Image 1 (tube, helix red, strand yellow):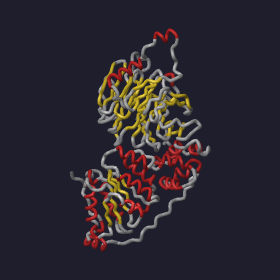
Image 2: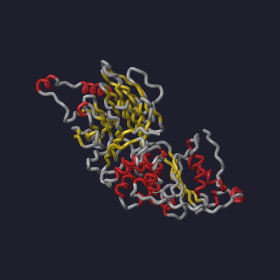
Image 3: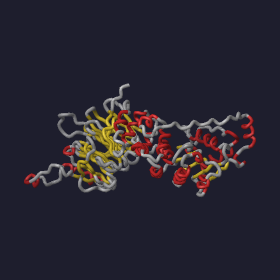
Image 4: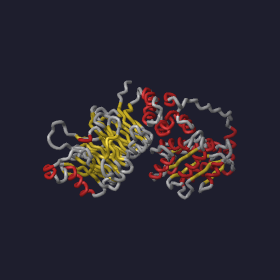
Length: 556
């Protein structure tokens, strides 16, 4: 396979460049390559040549560079955030980056210049060693000779290129380059701007990478701003306006923060696409944080006005839609909840990670008594529908959605299965696993008979598709991105039908289906679950936060 033409590197470094390309192409070579040498010997220039060519569109796979971070001034945390952004994964910490990359077995090449100039070189060295242990990763790092980081990196399997050695330079080409070169004095780097870390307006308007490093090195909590920033830093460091940054920072603010901060941050959000209605953060006690939100569903029927939140242990808590105050919990926890939905009457459907489908009745659900209870002792229509699903699919279900009288589930082979009063229907919509489902009821007001749902499915293949049972799926995906879908929600709200999409890189998209308006949001941590309320609020669940947002119409 051919690709774009590569130019020669400067300074006669053809032998070094040839060796780097051979290392990239050799499956038997060590996964870690260290480019070292004295100050000013051309290490950074060589890596810049490789990055400039290896990141071009159409580059052949064995020469492709997927991520690069100039490490000068960086910490292990900011390095992890930068790599996560480039590699389309969500990672709040270096450990989460390792977890995300270990789950994606595609070949990945990382280039990291200037380790010796990092803020925390030892911590970054440890991260690079851990990354190089992953069999599908190649890590190329530049570090000055004689540094402790260089010695630490060389203790394990590695390919080492010391540019002070003559073998890595063509002497004739180097002499020709040196003759035509106009040496210039190094340009002094400006001092980082001073930022008042206690002032939310200042931190939202400043260079977010500098703010991140300063907060990480600070021993003060800055009224709660430091913890909130580091919790959501993977989002805050992205390009955005100060108003948008204020929304994200407020969403991550714990209830132990300075009580003046929520109002100060809210005042900074004018012009943003979102308003924070409420937020619950790990450690909150007034009201309590409901735990890691692995699945969400808006309440229906006798659960209307509540939101169901399933945590990592299978406990499903109910919180009030208006303020997240506790409103009870469902009986009989289900271990490792994979998906959650609420049927029209208010009964909850819980899908576990092994594909088991369970019906749970809220303690406050109305119950028949006396003779009526004896006469209605058989399974409910919902329980009958669940039995049909179990009989058809066994434990192959991986996600679910409920809408009206219909129940939709999906599996690891890309198939979506819809069941309802009309019967059952199956269609293959994705390459690989279906990771999320949502459904809208298309029944018109006053229309007789059961409604046919409009089903939205998201997959590991990075597509969102729409399908209505009884019809052909739409030929064109609703949305396509180069990362898996992690969550879906759909609802007919007070302002019209809405579809919300959560992606594996932490992006949430909110699309008004009537007019096509799309709003985006990134909470920082990975997005596990979404829910939409009838009033139009969007709930976003992560391992650290549960946030309720309301879209705002921004006037140009």
